Amino acid sequence: MTWLTFALFVGSVVAVVLVMARRGWRGAPWREVALDVVLVGLFAVPTVFALQLPLAGPKARGTVDQTPFLVVLYVCLLLGMLAQYAHSRLSRPKAKRPPFDFGLFIAPVFSSPIIFIPLLAAVQSAGVDLYRADAARFMLYLVAFENGYFWKLIFDQRRENAGSNVKA
Image (tube, rainbow, N blue to C red; front, side):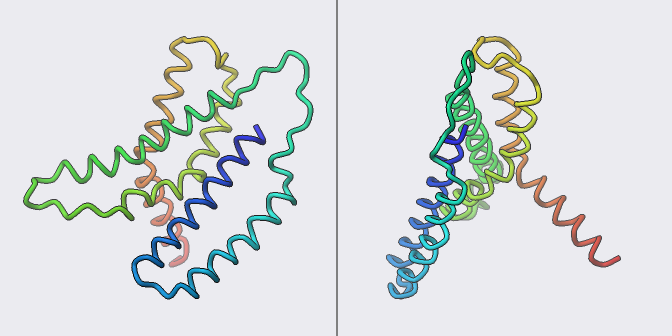
């Protein structure tokens, strides 16, 4: 499990650095981009060591590694997020579609860990045998896709609830 956490963490850091580099290629001052990358590194490296992310403890006998299943579950979540963008774009008449915006397309990926954590907790408490190809496992993949698809609705509702609590 710690290897999956480590992979998600490193993937997120790499994605942030790539977005920063893209800013540099689009005309942002390279000095600012380099400073941003250094700051990300200053936070990322100590985090890896403080949390000991890549250092998994010894496995208990008889335990099965769930990492492949969880990776597929995370990919299903990401596919759901990207499908939501594609559906909202393609459901408009062609003449009224805005031009493709890579930033809007990839933005949900940065929110995906926030959506994945409750899904992971639900999967772990469900007690499903993850290595049997049965309906329960397939349903978990569909639930992951659904959580990804409705991520924006969930965020908008939380923002609306937070705004109404502030006004009270």
